[in-house]
Length: 101
Image (cartoon, rainbow, N blue to C red; front, side, top):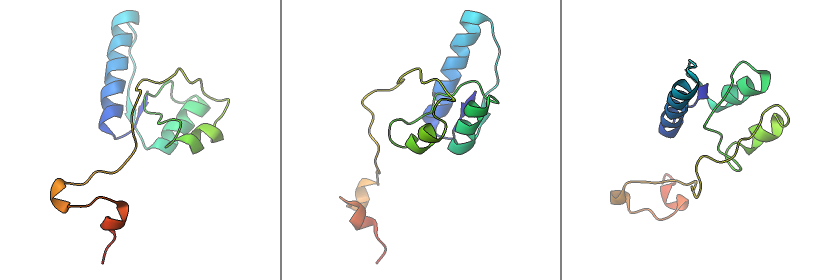
């Protein structure tokens, strides 16, 4: 099973593997990779699963590139948002505020 270095990728993958082991007495390994190799592994069959596909936004290019070579089983998180955060002490309210002066 492929996973990315993001915390949710590690935790979701661990939960999925744990459930599979309990239900099917099956063992699998989890390999940490970047998003591109994770998608390529699913497409070429060298990986069996991943729980870190950020669709329909962040990984749209990968989904388009490998269309027909993977099965989308649906969302495992709903209502998520993609954005940036900064510590409150920085007093920034926009990306423009982050530009170097």
